[in-house]
Image (cartoon, rainbow, N blue to C red; front, top):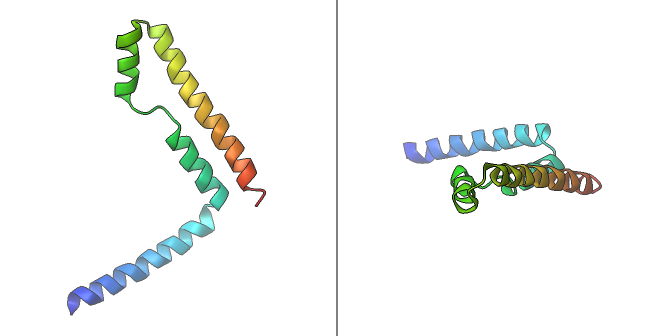
Length: 85
């Protein structure tokens, strides 16, 4: 029985945290954040593989800048479209 009471208290506190979070972060901001993190640089291993395959630090930096710029531009577009609704 104490486990059920603990579970109930945990769910109540999660509901409160969810209500507080939704009052701070708007849905358009959350969606833009999801797009920015999804389309950002995948990981350090992807960049190191790019460097190993291209043998060029210049090309690797261009790829990293491309990922970051595309993620920011896409998340900005998504934010502005989502804020219309």
